[in-house]
Structure formats: C-alpha cells, structure tokens
Image 1 (cartoon, rainbow, N blue to C red):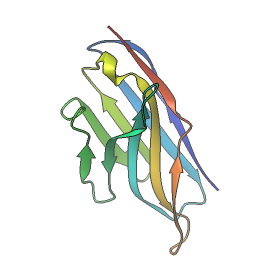
Image 2: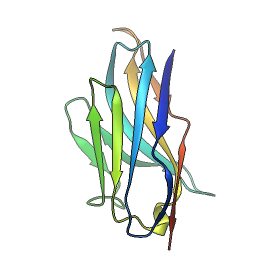
Image 3: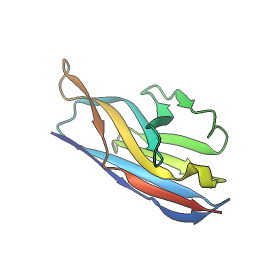
Image 4: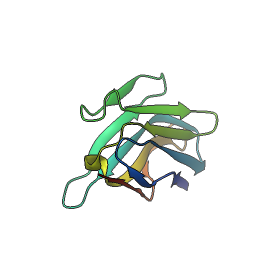
Length: 120
C-alpha cells in the first residue's frame, strides 16, 4: 500500500507565494515520475508540472516561470514552489506519483488534494 500526503495549501493574496509538499510512504521500490495537477470548480483536472527521475521537468504554459517543481528522491517527496500567484491559480492541487512497488509492478497514486485560494 502506498500513500501520498500533501501539505502547504492555504489562502494567499495575489502576487504571493506558497510551497506545496507531497511525501510518499509505504511499500515503494522506486518512484519514476512525480507531478502536480489541479482542479478548479467546474473544470477538469489539469496538469501543472511533472518531473521525472532524471530531473527533466514539464510545465503547463500558464505556470511557466512562476512555478517550480522539485523532487527529493531520498525523502520520496515532491515540492511545488508557487510564486506570483494569480486568482486563476485557485484550485485543489493534487500530487501524483508513478510508483514501482516491485521491479515488475508500476501504478499511479494520488494525494488527497490541498486547497489553494488566491484572493485578488
């Protein structure tokens, strides 16, 4: 069993910053990819940023330059540093990891979600 626990959401004014964290625990052989998605009210879940084991990153155009994704593989943790936040960044943010529980078994896992609210 693998669990992802998120922290760091909250309420911030436009232009402010927040840092999200997501730590994995459980039966983990290794973690290949990590990432963050978000879902605003009435909208579909969308990709925010991903980072693979080699360190390459991918960002949604809407967050490039403002957001930075980082990973600490030893701690099985992924971070999302969010700067210059805008009201349109308001959403529930979900972390995601592609986890190998054995050398042969690979599954996707999601965090419980953390609310980020940006006031204008």
